[in-house]
Image (tube, rainbow, N blue to C red; front, side):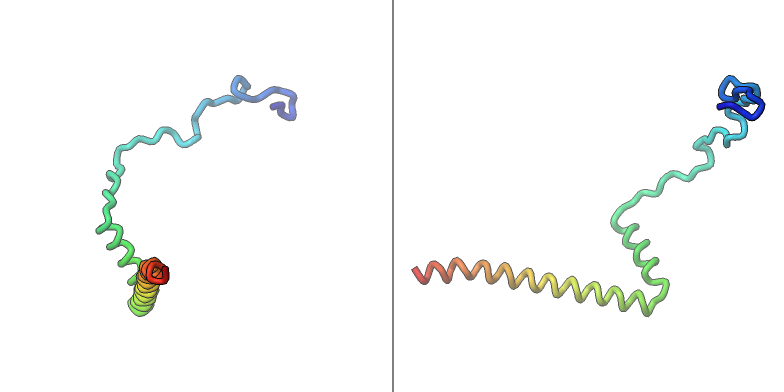
Amino acid sequence: VESKSGNKSGPKGKNFKGRRGRGGRKGKAGKAPPRKLDKASLDDDLDSYMMRDKKHGTAMLNDDLDAYMAKAKEAKEATKEEAEKPAEEAEEK
């Protein structure tokens, strides 16, 4: 890279200062150890986040539960119908 005066600046240029002014080294001293993540702690974090507004959080959890139960009911009925089809086909033959 050439400056206005024609001198080359770069790693071996006149104004090269090494790594000074770039933040320095960062050690691990003072850092808290990472928190162990398990199902219970993640569930607690999610509940505390969702329940900041109790009315909204409760409504959302109820909607999620209703959707899950409806999907489970549909899946159960679909497997029941699939189980009955071979039995009906066997009776027809």
